[in-house]
Image 1 (cartoon, rainbow, N blue to C red):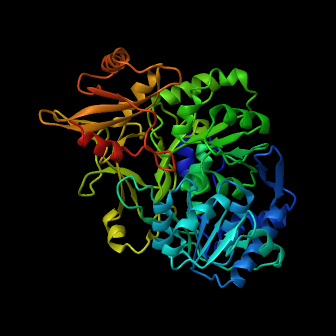
Image 2: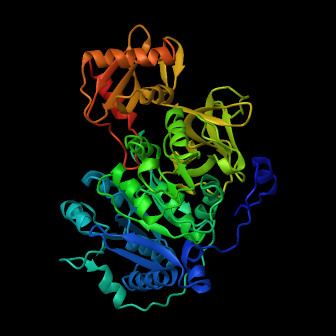
Image 3: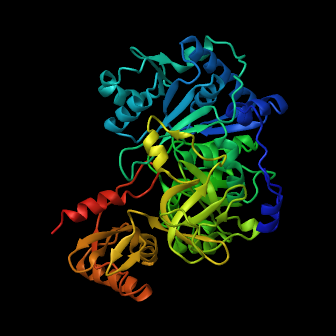
Amino acid sequence: MFKQAGDYDTLLANFRWQIPGTYNIATSVCDRWAAEDPDRLAIRHLREDGRAEAWSYLELARAANRFANSLAAKGIARGDRVALLLPQAPQTAIAHLAIYKIGAIAVPLAALFGLEALKYRLNDSGARALVTDTAGLEKLAEIRGDIPGLGLVVSIDGPESGVESFDALAEAASDRFETLQTTPDDPAMMIYTSGTTGQPKGVLHGHLVLPGHLPGIQMSQDFMPQAGDLFWTPADWAWAGGLLNALFPALHFGVPVVSFAFRKFDPERAFRLMADEGVRNAFIPPTALKMLRAVERPASRFDLKLRSVGSAGEALGRETYDWFAGEFGFQVNEFYGQTECNAVLGSCAACGVSRSGAIGKAIPGHEVAIIDDDGNVLPPETLGQIAVRRPDPVMFLEYWNKPEATEEKFIGDWMITGDQGLQDEDGYVHFVGRDDDVITSASYRIGPGEIEDCLLMHPAVQLSAAIGKPDPLRTEIVKAYVVLKDGVAADKALEDEIRTFVRKRLSAHEYPREIEFVPDLPMTTTGKVIRRILRERARTEG
């Protein structure tokens, strides 16, 4: 845990990892607070019907103990995988804590997953149990016969045929449970990769993953905790962003969390929620921030109490960074990582680490560099691959049942990210794009981020994605897929206008020679554009 410092060098000089011999996430984020300050607010849950539920740390701990006893009584034991197909809700946090208490492994699954995505992950993980809701049960009914290893299914919405009731199980169990003593490296959770570059892989993390995140999250939230802090994120708690960039760090620091399950992200409603609840801290992924830009004059229309906003998951871009600072009067703190090794680069305006167009500096406690294909560290301003040196507390244990893929993730002691970037003379890292996303055109290597950022500056553009389309003369040309703002009509004149707009602001080799207007972009459940799908689509075009 950081002590607040006014500059990055002081943070760096004073930081040392202090990892205990035994550590359990459930104890860290709940049980110790339940013992020290039992009535302290942990979760404020907003229901669709307008009612709110307040959960203290003691109530959360007792509910988690009951469900832990329930799982143990059903034969779920240490090392077993328990899948969670749930929205933001207190029961989601309770189920996670119960799983950690018994030494099992949580496998969070996004509610937006389709049937094949769910079937693959449930089978690949070997999940013995699933905790879900009515919407999840409807999907499960179509595929359950294809998941032979799945035994116990629990619904938070009540009993159904062949399904246990979450509340009934909890009511029948004791609210006392002795959390298993786990080591920091004992498996705790398995989060599947987004699948942007192929079949998703189960990323296995130990309990150590939470303390490994804490320095980066503290930086991105300008030294949380502070008096009056209240945390919210629109990010699904089924991915690393929602769990490890928001929910668990906030609870660890004793900062209450607002939960609300958006069926579809609504920018107006998001601002209203933050204003009504007095949210002070938020983790908002770049795609959501870009959607928030569509709301006119939010700072003057809404009585916001925000003091810190962190953003990660994709490149934020200069345009969104500058818009946020101009609108709200403080900087959004961009940070960087992957499911395998998250929150290793970051910004912190409170200690002077903030630069438009950069994803920050190495967070104290992590060694990050730009390397070449042989693992050599490259000099400043040289394009290469972003890499993290092992061992590192936030780094994954392995890919589930994929030892070869795990080995391929490393060059020596460097964990390679597959992301291209460069480090400037001041130590700031600039993200260029995924290895596969970098466009090669007439011998130039072009990152899609700068093009997409420029497109976003055009008043008609809501979202965009740039890819390389095969071309016999230039190897590839830049093609842009553009989602227009509501009420804007697509026509040839607008296409020419946008193309000229980008060419004037970037360069003759970077502007999109082709623009296609689309109603939406293919995205992962975590809000990342799946450019692979767009590249495949472009290859089939004439």
